[in-house]
Image (cartoon, rainbow, N blue to C red; front, side, top):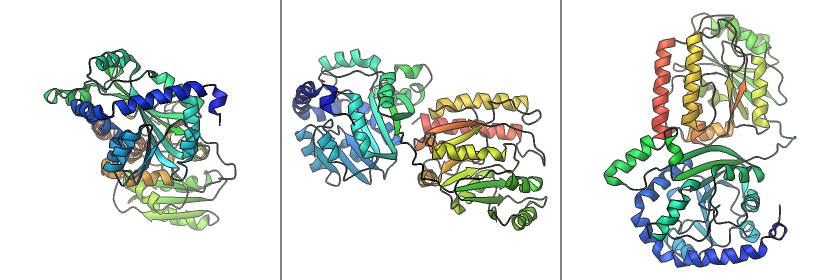
Length: 489
């Protein structure tokens, strides 16, 4: 941790903070009038922040003003800090169920005083970084309020709109501001990196700041998020996570979930080819109404390999999505890994997925079959072409890089899966594949995606259960669904 004295900004910070405090108190009475005048803009901004922060989280807002946004986020614990005593007084009166602190958010004493309420699930910085004297020091200082799973949600005006907002301020169209730091997205990412924080996702939104008889909402929902067009948006949003080094003594257990339907010839290989894990490992077969004797084979293999922890259930309903959910519900492991029963992805590779989560490199790990050369006969050319195309589309929709949406090998921690499960109502039961329930849920919960390239082999037993055209149509439906639930909001 570096000190204010070490940064050489002590005197400058004191002068700046006093001017910001005077400004905040001066505009206090005007704030409500400006909010009413620009209600559409603020409501649009709040709506996206509500999308980024699910209800029921432990939320800290630094630079909370009168507490309006913090209250809208419906936190299980809400703490707000602001330099303006007037604003904090109003916040306490309006939202007695929340905790508000009057203080300098750059002061180590103020941040230390918040430790009794932390760590927080989410820290909101709404236009905050533009007002602090030393962004790196500020971010390093607040890291003590974070756990490994904490998300920083940073919202700020686009650098390119700075001259326009200055003009609007002089014309009394928006709240007047003191001298602030205008930050590019690259600047914010760099500060995050310097403070050992890692960007999870970035988004630009709000192209039209006025309702315009409903036209503004249509523009912001369907046009402002389009490629190229979104570069002109007013607001930038960046979600970051704390990158904490792994404790070498922490060796979590693992559950390998193997959905299988008509995979009799692959069952024993799925056991014998799995690598050793550093912690305990269990294998869960979820059998999907096979007609080739797969269930009997599972029972035989379980008897043969009693040195392994193996469990098996018959699937209650149909589809891989249901099989994965049933398998996860039974799992005892701290890390959950999916291995498709066709073994087209080598079972030997699942250990890579385990270590990617343990080492903190990612939180939702997805295999990619489209990096290494695909074995002849494993995937038809049209399928490869469609997978590449859909991967580009989903990269845009999810705001995280994706090269293969339908690789069956995936990993996630049980804690993060529980978060997805808890917030599943936002998407509903929509996914027959099972892939997109996890992908969309992980994106909604701001988990860090990571892809691991895998070799993709042709089947040694059985035939594919994928219909090129029927499942292609379903995949197109997933694109439309994702656009509606993740972009057009």
